[in-house]
Amino acid sequence: MRDVLIVHSQVSLMRNYPDIPFDTRQNPEDAARVISRTRSALQGRGFALHLLRDMSQDRHMALLEAGQIPLWVRNDRGTSAVMLPLDGSACVTLCGTAHVAIAAKRPGSALPEAAEACFAIDDALSRRVSFAFDEELGYLQGQYGQMGTGMNAGMRVHLPLLLRSPQMEEIRKEAQRAGVQFFVPSAGKKNEFGILDVMNASALGMTESEICQLVSNQVQKLCDMERELRQKALRDAPLALEDKVWRAYGLLQTARVLGQEEFWRLWSDVRLGAALELLPVAVDKVDGLVPEALVAHLRSYAEEALTGEDLDACRAARVRELLGEKPLL
Amino acid sequence: MSEHENEQVLCEDCGQQSAVCTVAVMMGEKVMHRKLCQACMAKASMAIAAGNLGQVLGSILSAARNAAQSRAEEAAEEGKPQQAAQEQPLPALDGDAEACPQCGLTYEAFRKQRRPACAACCTAFRQSVKRVLSESCASLQHVGRRPVTEAVAQRKRAHLERLQRQLEEAVAREDYEKAAMLRDALRNEENRGNA
Ligand SMILES: [Zn+2]
Ligand SMILES: [Zn+2]
Image (cartoon, rainbow over all chains, first blue to last red; front, side, top):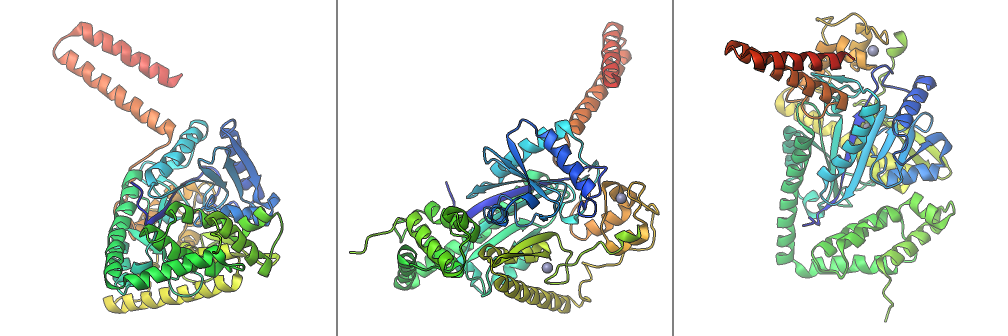
C-alpha cells in the first residue's frame, strides 16, 4: 500500500571512466571523450543526448524541477550533457559530479524500483565500457560520499507536524549516527513546506539494497512519529486542523495570482488534508501539482518566458486547472 | 600537478564543505551559477525551483549559519575542536605513492585538496583515501554490485577453482577416469579464457 507521507524516491548511481580525470571541466577534450564513449555504449537503447550548453535555460531548469537531474548531481552548462530516455525510465547526466550519473525517480516509497531502473542502464553500459572499479574501494569516485557502490538513495517525506516539533534536532543527530543525512528544502522561513529529504551519507561497505533499506527504515521511523502527531492533532484540535486544510484548499482552487512560496505553503497544508482524508482530493493529485506549478514548467506550458505577476497568474490558473476548479455557488 | 593545488572548491554558501554541484539559479533573464555543497544544495532546492536568487541566498545563508552553529555546539558538547572529524590533516607520505602515475597529481597536492583527481589516484594514494573514508564509512570493503565483466570473471574464477578442487579429490580417491575428464574440462576452460 502507498504510504501517503512519502512523496517520492530517487536513486542515483555514479560511475567514472578509469582513464579520464574525474573533473572534466578543466579540459573540454575529456568531456568530449566521456560523452562520445557513453553515447556509443547506449546506442540503440532509446536515449536522446542533449548538451546543456545547447539547451535553453528553461528546459535545463525544467529537468532540475522534475528531478530528472537529481539536485545532488552537479551539472555545468559549459561541459555537462544529459541523456534523456524516451520511456522515462532513468536519466543519465554526463560530466557532472561523476562522468556518468544514472538517476531514476519514482513516486511514493519505491527505492528498489528506482534502483532497478538504474541497474538496467548500468548493466547495459558495463557490457560495452569499463568503469573505474577497485576490489576494495568499489566504484572509484572523486567524491568520498559516493565511493563504493556509487549510490545515493533519497526519499522525500512530507512531515509538516514533526518538522515543527522540538525533538527534531535530536532525531537528526540520531539519524546521522545511523548513517543518513537530512536536508530540509525551504525558501527562507523555517520548515515552511514540511518537506524533508532523507539520504544515505556514505556508499561504501553496504550493498545497494542495504543502502535502500537503511534509508527506508529511517523514513519509516519518521513517518511513525508524524502519524502519532497527526492523530494527536485530530484528537486535540480537530476543528483548527480542518479549518487550516480547507482554507488552503479553497485558496489553491480559487486564487488568481499565486506566488511560488505561497503555493508551496498551501500545497503542504492541502497535502496534509488529503492524506488525512479531510479533503475530497487524492494525495497523488496534490503531488501532481509539483513540478507543474514551478517556473520552468509554467513557462513551457505557456510557451512564453513569463515573469512577475504574469507568471504568478499562470501558476494560479494551472493549479486551478489541475486541481479541478469548483464553481462557486 | 601544481594546477591541481587550487582544485578543491569550497561551497560558495557555507564555505565549509567542498562544493559538489553547480546550480543554475535564474534571476530574471540571467542565470547565475553557484557552486554548492550537497547539504546547501538540498536546503536550497525549493527556492531554486522558485527561481528567486534572493530566496536562495537567504535560505542558504541561514542554513549555513544554523549548520555552523550546531557544529560549534556539538563540538563544545563533546569537548572537541571544531571540524576535527572533517578536516583531520592527512599525514606526510605514509605507504602511498609520491605521485599518481596517470594524472601526475603529487601526494603533497593530494594532501592539500584531500581529493583524488582520477581513478588511478585512488589506488596510488590508497592509504590516505581510506583514512578519509574511515571518517564516514563503517566498513572499508566494497560489497554490492560490480561491473558485469568483473562479475563474469569472478564467476569464472569460482568455477575454475571448483573444477580444480574436484580434480584433486578425484586424484585423492584414485578415480583416474574422472580425473582425466576434469583435467580436460579445466584445460578447455583455461584456453577459452585466454582466447
Ligand atoms: Zn555548503
Ligand atoms: Zn590521478
